[in-house]
Every structure is written in C-alpha cells, then in structure tokens.
Picture 1: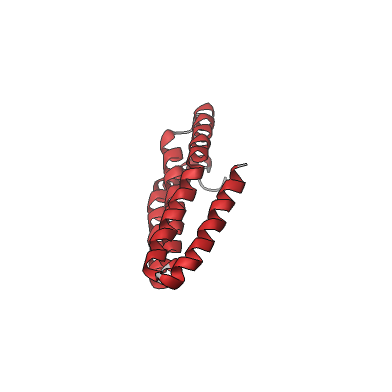
Picture 2: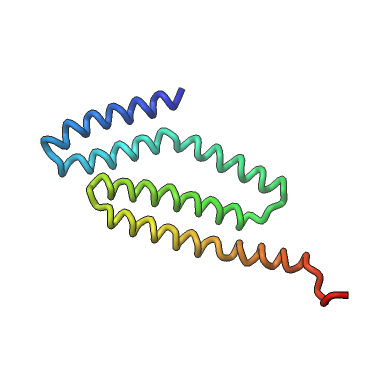
Length: 133
C-alpha cells in the first residue's frame, strides 16, 4: 500500500527533522522541503492517472478542453500554494505564508473568471428574453 510508504517516510522525516532542528535549525527547513518533494514524487503517478481519467470523461461529455485545463490549473495552484505556505510556516514565517495563500486565491479568481462568464452567458440564454406576458 502506497499510503504506508507515504506515512512511513513522513514519520521518519519528522523524527529526523526533530533531531536535526536541535543541532542545525538552518538545515531543518531544507530537509523539510526535500521530504515534501519526496512525498510528492510518491503520488505523482497517481495524479497523472486522475488527470487522464478526467480528460477521458471530459471528452465523452464533449466538454470544452479549456474548462478542464483551467480546472486542473486551479487545483494545481491550490496544492502548490498550500505546499509553499506550509514550508513558510515550518520556517516560522506565517506572514509570508498568508501572502502566498492570498496570492493563490487571487490567481484562482483570475483563472475562474472566464468560466464564470461562460456560465453566466449560458444561464442568460436559458432565461426568457421578453417582459411579462
């Protein structure tokens, strides 16, 4: 089971980081980043499989590829921002972590805007055009 490997690496990295942080705190942040990257690489193939399934479903449903691509970008921004913010917090920089999260939210809004506009256009097309009869 992959989850046992992920949890095992996480626990071992945490124990190692607790020991290193006492002796060399400046090295602990770098090791934390490395552990995060290793854990991400464990699940990278699973992410590819999920993306492939979503692409197949979008093709079958004849959904514009632009919408799926945008959705995947939004999910990617959320994950990357969370990873970066946690690294900032691990380094004791919660203010910077908050700014990373705020920037991610703004980027998500910018990416989502064309989808929201298309949705509004579709809804407006469903509404009757004239006044009350």
